[in-house]
Length: 265
Image (cartoon, rainbow, N blue to C red; front, side, top):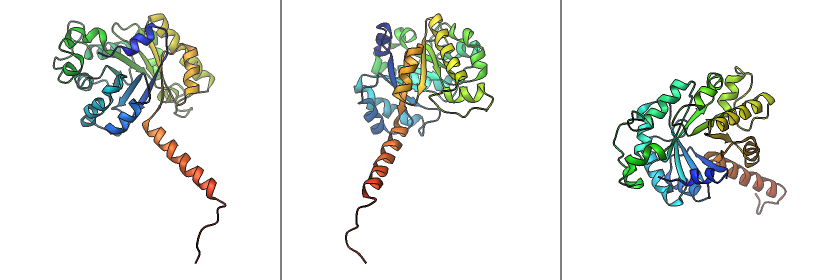
């Protein structure tokens, strides 16, 4: 299994993750070629389905990056399917209690540690014939904290055996903690949200697991590293495509606004 992320964390180096929401193997290949430490295929909100997963993984394999998938929900079939497809780790949304965190870890682990069914169809091809023997100790499992309930149960969740880390979803967390008063979105600046993010990072550090945060910009990600976050997501395919296209059009409009047009009626 890919150990690049673990090696970076062992060396004290923060890592940068990319978010993939487009179900396109070429787009995934382009993103993987940019030097990210890891890339996450978003099976929850991404415009893709299970048939897109393997081609995207195949396109990114040569990059050497650690490949993750966010599953749609706390569902054993979803967790086991992405692992069998060969991902190095799983991010699971909306974990609200230690009991749910334990269920997630169980779904991602073979017996006796868990309840994962054996059938590593592609995983055994890409990770080796000894995959089953090493899977439990090498796979990554991130539980998402993104609700007031999950935040209230933070200390119990981070103590879950077998959990690699906590991945913070700041948009849902802001909506939930503020009971709808704050809008969703990344790169929070509200004092109460910054305090919550710092609280989560500190809890992870005490428990000896990895705090990760979804960010919109490199500048905010760098601030998060200062708070103790060891993995940060900086952007994703859909946003980069939209921003680059919008800038090209905007630049063109500005540069040609006063340019006389050739010909005439």
